[in-house]
Length: 306
Image 1 (cartoon, one colour):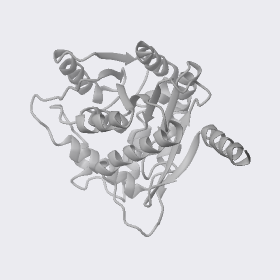
Image 2 (image 1 turned 135 degrees about the horizontal axis):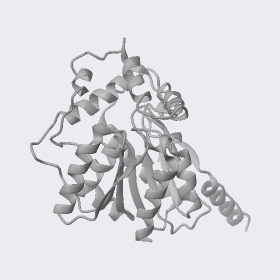
Image 3 (image 1 turned 60 degrees about the horizontal axis):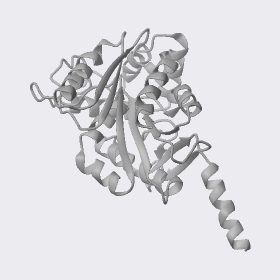
Image 4 (image 1 turned 120 degrees about the vertical axis):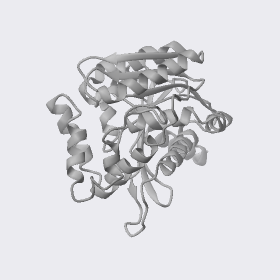
């Protein structure tokens, strides 16, 4: 009887903890599933921050969605926020392939901890690089099918002010991260470009807070990894994926508008359920410039599947 009580108590405590540090042996991942008081049957909306950000960038968006009855999953990307390497002497470069593997780790931990005997209805999105990761994941049918086999069903994708891999658009400026124009000695200038992509003072300060948590070297490695991805262009090719998609742009972020429009057009031409919306009075950092408007768009999209 006592052992059964202890089991129930331990299970309750685990299910009540929103934020956890979980190590894969190399990286200690900061993972947060919020809205645990909402129904276990509620959709899980996974929001991933961009380069130089952390999970706190989606605090206001998360609060809104939780109030609407959803659960929200967030994590700090490796070398960002509180997701840091376990051993400081270990040499671990930033690589997109590793970040995609990290996503499997985060999702497997969430599934086994909070949904051990239940399926998850998942919506995956993110800002900037987080949006790129959501697009790359949705385009990988093997990964999507593997998740479904584990009871994790990807129902929608929500790229926010995101680049689109392989899109045939101008990538002017990204070559500076490859040719050495930006290096560890002047990477602070590149960080200022991201800080300046937010419109409002409080959004700029929040961007600055988070970007100062990543070292100059790791920030440079991350930007180089994105630059190399963006330089892989297939003429007139944008890959649609057969998953309902909400593409969110900002009116004052011209760099991502063209390629997100191309992806939307490719989706619609392929018969994919695709929506394209523009957030007014926002720069690139939409979750900080216009969190309520962003959250409202996500809510209206996700509720269509409830």
